[in-house]
Amino acid sequence: MNKMVTKRQAINKQTGFTLIELVTVIVLLGILAAVAAPKFIDLTGDAKAAKLKAANGAIKSAAAMVYAKSVIHGVDDIHTLYVGNSLNPHDVSIHWGYPNIQDAGIATAAGLSLDDYERIKTVDSAIVFQIKGSDVFDPHCHVQYGPDSGTWQSPPLITIDVSGC
Image 1 (cartoon, one colour):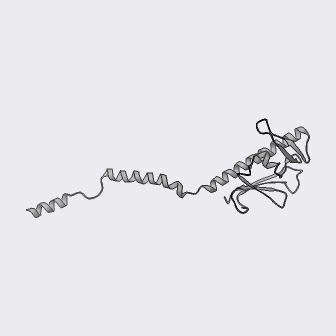
Image 2 (cartoon, helix red, strand yellow):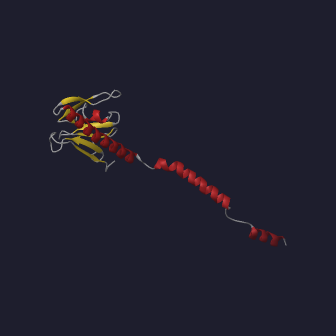
Protein backbone atom coordinates (compact mmCIF):
# COMPACT_ATOMS: atom_id res chain seq x y z
CA MET A 1 0.00 0.00 0.00
CA ASN A 2 2.83 2.35 0.66
CA LYS A 3 3.88 2.01 -2.92
CA MET A 4 0.40 2.89 -4.09
CA VAL A 5 0.24 6.10 -2.03
CA THR A 6 3.62 7.13 -3.26
CA LYS A 7 2.62 6.68 -6.88
CA ARG A 8 -0.61 8.55 -6.31
CA GLN A 9 1.22 11.41 -4.63
CA ALA A 10 3.60 11.55 -7.54
CA ILE A 11 0.69 11.65 -10.02
CA ASN A 12 -1.24 14.35 -8.11
CA LYS A 13 1.82 16.57 -7.50
CA GLN A 14 1.65 19.80 -9.50
CA THR A 15 4.39 20.73 -11.88
CA GLY A 16 5.05 24.06 -13.65
CA PHE A 17 4.56 27.69 -12.59
CA THR A 18 1.61 29.42 -11.00
CA LEU A 19 -0.04 32.40 -12.62
CA ILE A 20 1.37 34.74 -9.99
CA GLU A 21 4.91 33.54 -10.70
CA LEU A 22 4.46 34.07 -14.44
CA VAL A 23 3.03 37.59 -14.00
CA THR A 24 5.87 38.49 -11.62
CA VAL A 25 8.51 37.38 -14.14
CA ILE A 26 6.81 39.29 -16.97
CA VAL A 27 6.63 42.47 -14.87
CA LEU A 28 10.30 42.17 -13.91
CA LEU A 29 11.31 41.64 -17.55
CA GLY A 30 9.29 44.72 -18.52
CA ILE A 31 11.02 46.85 -15.91
CA LEU A 32 14.43 45.62 -17.01
CA ALA A 33 13.63 46.33 -20.65
CA ALA A 34 12.45 49.86 -19.84
CA VAL A 35 15.63 50.61 -17.92
CA ALA A 36 18.10 48.92 -20.25
CA ALA A 37 16.68 49.80 -23.68
CA PRO A 38 17.74 53.49 -23.73
CA LYS A 39 21.32 52.44 -23.01
CA PHE A 40 21.40 50.31 -26.14
CA ILE A 41 19.54 52.67 -28.49
CA ASP A 42 21.83 55.34 -29.93
CA LEU A 43 19.93 58.58 -30.55
CA THR A 44 22.92 60.86 -31.16
CA GLY A 45 22.30 60.98 -34.91
CA ASP A 46 18.73 62.17 -34.38
CA ALA A 47 19.95 64.75 -31.88
CA LYS A 48 22.57 66.08 -34.31
CA ALA A 49 20.01 66.29 -37.12
CA ALA A 50 17.55 68.15 -34.88
CA LYS A 51 20.25 70.60 -33.76
CA LEU A 52 21.27 71.29 -37.37
CA LYS A 53 17.63 71.80 -38.37
CA ALA A 54 17.32 74.36 -35.59
CA ALA A 55 20.49 76.09 -36.81
CA ASN A 56 19.11 76.07 -40.35
CA GLY A 57 15.94 77.80 -39.18
CA ALA A 58 17.92 80.33 -37.15
CA ILE A 59 20.15 81.13 -40.14
CA LYS A 60 17.18 81.61 -42.49
CA SER A 61 15.37 83.83 -39.99
CA ALA A 62 18.46 85.88 -39.21
CA ALA A 63 19.27 86.41 -42.89
CA ALA A 64 15.72 87.59 -43.61
CA MET A 65 15.59 89.92 -40.60
CA VAL A 66 19.02 91.45 -41.27
CA TYR A 67 18.13 91.99 -44.93
CA ALA A 68 14.85 93.67 -43.95
CA LYS A 69 16.66 95.97 -41.52
CA SER A 70 19.37 96.79 -44.09
CA VAL A 71 16.68 97.73 -46.64
CA ILE A 72 14.94 99.94 -44.08
CA HIS A 73 18.20 101.74 -43.27
CA GLY A 74 19.35 101.90 -46.89
CA VAL A 75 22.52 99.91 -46.25
CA ASP A 76 23.41 97.45 -48.98
CA ASP A 77 27.14 96.93 -49.41
CA ILE A 78 29.84 96.04 -46.91
CA HIS A 79 28.82 97.70 -43.63
CA THR A 80 28.10 96.89 -40.03
CA LEU A 81 24.48 96.96 -38.94
CA TYR A 82 23.23 97.05 -35.36
CA VAL A 83 20.61 94.32 -35.04
CA GLY A 84 20.53 93.66 -31.33
CA ASN A 85 18.20 94.80 -28.61
CA SER A 86 18.75 96.07 -25.09
CA LEU A 87 19.06 92.51 -23.77
CA ASN A 88 21.31 91.21 -26.55
CA PRO A 89 23.08 94.07 -28.35
CA HIS A 90 25.38 93.20 -31.24
CA ASP A 91 26.56 94.43 -34.60
CA VAL A 92 26.39 92.26 -37.68
CA SER A 93 28.66 92.76 -40.65
CA ILE A 94 26.68 92.63 -43.88
CA HIS A 95 27.43 92.25 -47.55
CA TRP A 96 24.79 93.34 -50.05
CA GLY A 97 22.25 93.55 -47.25
CA TYR A 98 22.74 89.99 -45.99
CA PRO A 99 24.93 88.82 -43.10
CA ASN A 100 28.36 87.87 -44.38
CA ILE A 101 30.22 84.70 -43.51
CA GLN A 102 32.69 86.38 -41.17
CA ASP A 103 32.48 85.87 -37.42
CA ALA A 104 30.48 89.08 -36.95
CA GLY A 105 28.09 88.05 -39.71
CA ILE A 106 25.63 85.19 -39.96
CA ALA A 107 26.85 83.30 -36.88
CA THR A 108 26.33 86.39 -34.74
CA ALA A 109 22.97 87.23 -36.31
CA ALA A 110 21.69 83.66 -35.91
CA GLY A 111 23.12 83.30 -32.41
CA LEU A 112 25.20 80.23 -33.28
CA SER A 113 27.77 79.71 -30.56
CA LEU A 114 31.31 78.43 -31.01
CA ASP A 115 30.57 76.19 -28.04
CA ASP A 116 28.01 74.26 -30.11
CA TYR A 117 29.05 74.58 -33.75
CA GLU A 118 32.22 74.29 -35.77
CA ARG A 119 32.52 76.82 -38.59
CA ILE A 120 34.38 75.85 -41.71
CA LYS A 121 34.93 78.29 -44.57
CA THR A 122 34.71 76.73 -47.99
CA VAL A 123 36.49 77.61 -51.22
CA ASP A 124 33.33 79.02 -52.80
CA SER A 125 32.96 81.87 -50.25
CA ALA A 126 30.48 79.97 -48.10
CA ILE A 127 30.53 78.83 -44.52
CA VAL A 128 29.58 75.40 -43.23
CA PHE A 129 28.27 74.78 -39.74
CA GLN A 130 28.51 71.35 -38.19
CA ILE A 131 28.08 70.06 -34.67
CA LYS A 132 31.11 70.62 -32.49
CA GLY A 133 33.06 67.50 -31.71
CA SER A 134 33.30 66.25 -35.26
CA ASP A 135 36.98 65.84 -36.05
CA VAL A 136 36.62 66.19 -39.82
CA PHE A 137 34.16 67.82 -42.19
CA ASP A 138 31.10 65.65 -42.65
CA PRO A 139 29.56 66.29 -46.09
CA HIS A 140 26.27 64.71 -45.00
CA CYS A 141 25.71 66.38 -41.62
CA HIS A 142 25.94 70.16 -41.92
CA VAL A 143 24.28 73.48 -42.77
CA GLN A 144 25.83 75.71 -45.43
CA TYR A 145 25.37 79.46 -45.89
CA GLY A 146 26.86 81.30 -48.81
CA PRO A 147 26.31 83.28 -51.97
CA ASP A 148 23.97 81.88 -54.58
CA SER A 149 25.82 81.30 -57.86
CA GLY A 150 28.99 82.93 -56.56
CA THR A 151 27.58 86.42 -56.03
CA TRP A 152 26.17 88.19 -52.99
CA GLN A 153 23.89 90.35 -55.14
CA SER A 154 21.11 87.79 -54.73
CA PRO A 155 19.73 86.14 -51.58
CA PRO A 156 22.16 83.69 -50.00
CA LEU A 157 21.87 80.00 -50.58
CA ILE A 158 21.14 78.16 -47.33
CA THR A 159 21.27 74.38 -47.57
CA ILE A 160 21.11 71.57 -45.06
CA ASP A 161 22.13 67.95 -45.34
CA VAL A 162 21.36 65.65 -42.41
CA SER A 163 21.36 62.38 -44.34
CA GLY A 164 24.55 61.20 -42.64
CA CYS A 165 23.97 62.33 -39.08
